[in-house]
Length: 107
Length: 125
Image (cartoon, rainbow over all chains, first blue to last red; front, side, top):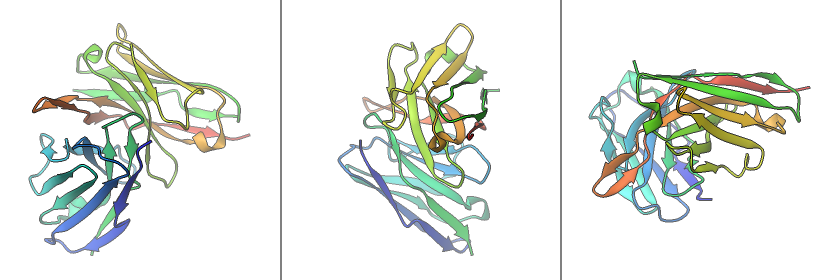
């Protein structure tokens, strides 16, 4: 199975900061990667699919990039409502696999 | 409103069985692949199973292969997860999710756009 890692595991940033989360795959996955946001007690929410395509209704401050093995999720200007845990998910091959998550807190 | 609603969770003894259901509404259920994803208390998300829209192909995580079976009833807009030989480590909130399956530049990506709130499974004697 393809292993996914994320860094950092957690971060704390101020409102307005630019935040970058990295996801790495154990083998090349083209750009078959999605990003999901999860708030405590809530279901995950799709942010990005295909590594860089923004899901309808998601604010444009969220963006994704990368291909092959290295991917990033960027929040261009962090907002209070962005406090959450972010997960990457590879859909290149079964079994699909999530990264361990990155918890984002607001200072 | 497009939504999915899980049910069937509860307390089961180790080695026992449970069947989860996921009722879909607001979209053409038969046109979409579906997945089950779980989250143990305080842990991250774990993808566990996937079924194509027709039900003809199914896929599993190694952790549940041979014990869990995903299925669907397109006539009743319902997804199922039959869970056998349950272990303590299967305790989690189980979510079902709809795969949007988005074509972009000749490639189709999975994109789980609709999720249920989940149903809790507890495995304990």
